Picture (cartoon, rainbow, N blue to C red):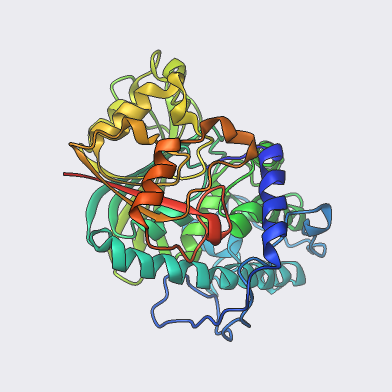
Amino acid sequence: MRLNARTFTAIALSILALATSVGAQTWRDSAGWPFRRSKATPTPTPTPPRAVIASTPSDQVSLPPMPVIQVPPGVVAPPNDTAHFLAGMPVPSDSPLAQFAQTAAWQEHSRTLEERFTNLIPRFQKIAAWRTAYLPESNQGIPVAFYMFSGPDFLYVDQFFPNASVYVLCGTEPIGPPPDPLHLADMSSALANLQNSMNSLLRFSFFITKDMKTDLQQPQLKGVLPIFYVLIARADKRIVDVTFGALNREGTFQENGAGKPNGMIPGVRIRYVDNRTQNAQTMFYFTTDISDGGVRPNPGFLKFCEHFAVGASLLKSSSYLLFENGFSTIRNFLLDHSSTIVQDDAGIPLAYFNRDKWNLRLFGTYTGPIETFKQHYQPQLRELYEQSNPPPLDFGFGYQWNYKISNLIVAQRF
């Protein structure tokens, strides 16, 4: 779910133009809400969902300097402690990270993330209510959920398919080494950059490609793994095991530690337990090119996915890549190996769904793509929206971030 800077600017202007038309709305927290708060916090003051504006240089986070704390050589914090620490959540008193959690820099980091994730609660309450009303089967166990072009966005696949046994995500963004906060040269800067790298996801539900290329190559907390740690911890999961590996041409995941063996597709496997349901779940992320030109010389990723047979798929803010001839292989894979596809209009074009095999349900409003992708306007989809009078959406989804002009399509195989 990536976006370049030009596209992001277009969306931001759209949001600003619509912000004044949105009235205040009362939100209520509910018992058992999936996002975990690190400590007891009051219900957030009701705010109009369109009050968010585009990122500016003044939005960039900075934290107080971290005092020097000596750590004995060879000491490493467990992955779950690390995830809680990076997410601004309490760590066990006997954790080697506990002393760092007493510093002013970490406490400011914690307060900021607490506020940001608390502000997400109303949005995800609405997604959960929509899911229960219109996609109740997603609340049941499913074998696998595919999220192509995801980047490090664990949030939304977990929201739409919360009880999958396995999640398979992919993107071109690097995984990075295991996060090790205990041995950072400048922990304050590293935590601030981690916050900055999640700005657009937490505000608008997608990443900006240009910013990710910079944010994920910082000298400390590099790659997508620190972001995954934060999102998994904040979704109230307990990380059990993190394993680096790579896919060979036959699609076998071979454990090998952090790194990229020649000719293989690097990946990471994160095993965790959902603290609410106690279900054991697994997420895979692979750094790979899934265009036809990337899949043809190295088919390992799709062969890995084929091992799971049929599952559910999420497509969101995918730059309309599946409209292009150069992505026909992954498009056909999704059509052949999905029983349910949840997507916005940037996913698989309407013309590729055989109506004898697929039932399509529409939600929200289709006004066409944003300006950057206007060439991918679908007259047939607009006509279908006009004929079907679909239920409205009360949450934003995809590039049309404003819920009043967002669209969502559920395709289910007969």
